[in-house]
Image (cartoon, rainbow, N blue to C red):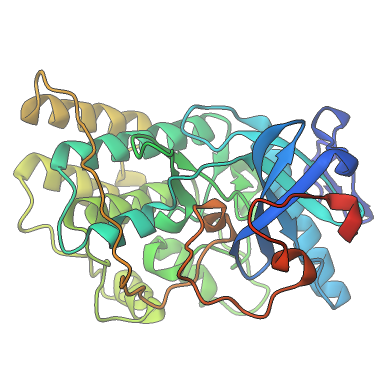
Length: 353
């Protein structure tokens, strides 16, 4: 299942020399996050502060092949596109372990940002500004024929000043030309387009075609969340939410939204993917709405005061998330030797591998 550009084949991974990182020049610092398939560390590369994502290889031959494929796709997608609202890719290596190096964003994930703000909501201008950042990132991806498939607040990172949102985690991204071969490996259920969830319910091994409009649906759910600062489909599990959206055509309520804004949200989450707008249209609709509510004033994000007692709903974090600011109050699992190093201590990558 090769990408066609030399990044991944059944025999193994071959990185473009342009993006090949020399592990001897990597210095790894404190762990800043962990997902199902990777750990992410603050680090340095050529004296630049970076995020270093170290991917678990897996245990079984099947798992190893799957993880290599995901790694190869993520590297390829990251290397193909550059945009101010996409996390900047710096490089990767696959020996002695699989590593992806990107810019370090210390503003945290959008999810944490919103949780810390609750029960307050974002200023509507700020919410629309963030939505425009996300829509512009998606427009860039789609213009390169890439479907993200995992758009959700955990995969949206903020700059340190909390003024700009950037999209991350390309582990599930796919080229649209390959969608005929897509299987059920998709994003988090709560934000998942109904046509993706219906793929999951197919018999094992059966394929289904879908297109870039799956990202428009996920965007609508994220936009609703930006406006309301509530978990979409609150009170439901991930699977219950996906089932209700796919088979009962249930959506979060848009009744309390201004008419123009409700029209944007509801058009993006329509059941028929072909009737959803593309991201160029979404951007124009958002800009038009922004001009009606704030014709002259720039949107200025409010100062956020961190709540030490924020309760996180039981969602699955994307490994991306995990390029976010450290939470010093987090209770960690038992630490590896490199995680026991004092904060601020950076060691050469090769010392561990």
